[in-house]
Length: 304
Image (tube, rainbow, N blue to C red; front, side, top):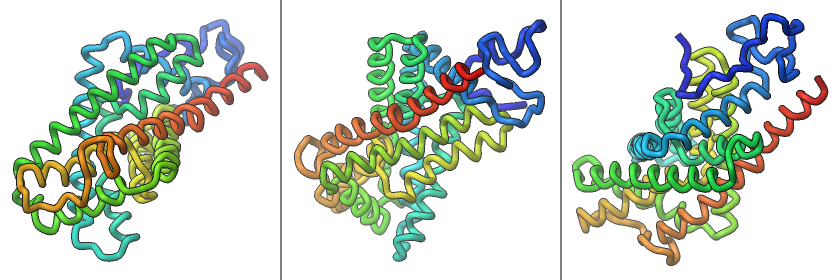
């Protein structure tokens, strides 16, 4: 059994009976290789990812629910990352442990077919480039996905904040330190780190859909969040967890530190950080991942 991650199968993934060997009706060589473990071509991967975005947009209520659950999964990863790094004094080791704990979040999302806004940014942009989605449809996809992910992550961290218990004391201090570090970065630093984040993450998403074996897919899905966490980058939904946890712990348990983080658009504000990281994540996922893969697919098809 292989993992389909809710992506629709494309009609051009198999050559028609009268096609020349190695060619499909669209002229892409070896779209689906004979070896079941050999990766798909770039063109087949691009079409597959774009079709996933179109399918999500066609079922908005289901997409909203998938986004809510996806946000919960990301916040779950943030909680685990903070937990395993609490009390670790060496920065590199702490970052490594955070990445190892957080990596499972994207695996859960892709394997279960849930939605993450940064993946939808790249997938929807490929659909726009393929002319299977309008610009308005893309804006709707991104808006619904962002709202769903943020709400889902907030629900999870609210439950954790209200629970207290193991999330107080040393854990609360670690959460406040990580949140303050992310919220306190200058505008351009936060923006560029958000660009780098989706450069990592959406490359791994594309590799997930290019791979054809379960092990390869889950490895690629794990790599993206692992890389962006240990790299110290900024992810809009992960930051709902990293900044939201100290805020909500302090709300329910006033003795818990919050590191100077606020809710609004001011300095060190949650909404300020989410606005900057959303723009940076959008740039990284579309211009540095989706666009290059789409150009490569077009060049390969024209050459064929």
